Length: 350
Image (cartoon, rainbow, N blue to C red; front, side, top):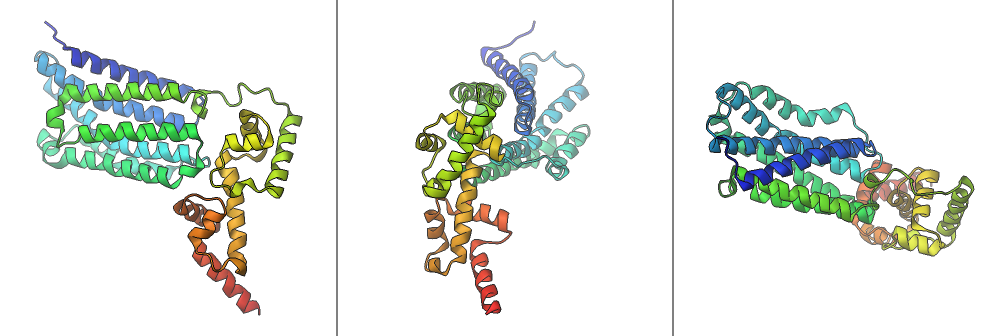
């Protein structure tokens, strides 16, 4: 007789829901970030499904009578942990950097995953019990911390909806990592792990509902907009005049809504104009002006008394690491070095 308890049934529901979400993200607005998140959900669901099947076999010893097939399924499921970390980091990079593009170098992150998938056919449980599980967990932890750093460094580049979405994911995954760690897993158990994943998936669904319409995943690009080309050109002109005369980008608290209020236009009209006319996100557009202003001030001796941090804040940046990262990305050097090198070039000319 087949036996299943309530906890396992609920865990099954969460895993199935994770696969549904993966399908939604894969087919909705076919961006790199959505596809990466879909694969992340798929890999995580496979990993959790492994726990559920282990628990079911404990309840039903007659399940999977072929031990070799059973062992391969279990170890393959464990190996998916080595894909979860890289996918989590890559998802954050793709959401935080509008210019992100998939390239073959990214595949190096998945080399351990590929090797462990192959090894799953040969290794025995003693390997996982004596360091293998810890190695998988540490891999996820390292990539989680890298994703968190990526989020902190690029916080000012994203809109409120995307910020809330990514913050929610960091919280959900952080809680899962604490409770699912090798130290605490003894208390959580196989079915408990699946249950926790179900809670995390439901929380993800909640975030999707709360942020609906605020981030690009939930809508087709400009699907609700009826702007004509002439109107876009008009908004572009008003933007250029405002940024030239009023310089609102110097306000570190400037948001899309505040700028729309300043120009007396609708938020989604302004967002579309920036994206379509300048081929940039709002954050990139604002920061391009801030960076240009900071570069000019670094060249001007009048501002030599200012430290780099003070100069960045005066130009509208609310984070020095963000300013340094963006500056180095554009100029291939640090602000301090740029200032010194510019002064030296002027001295040589004299």
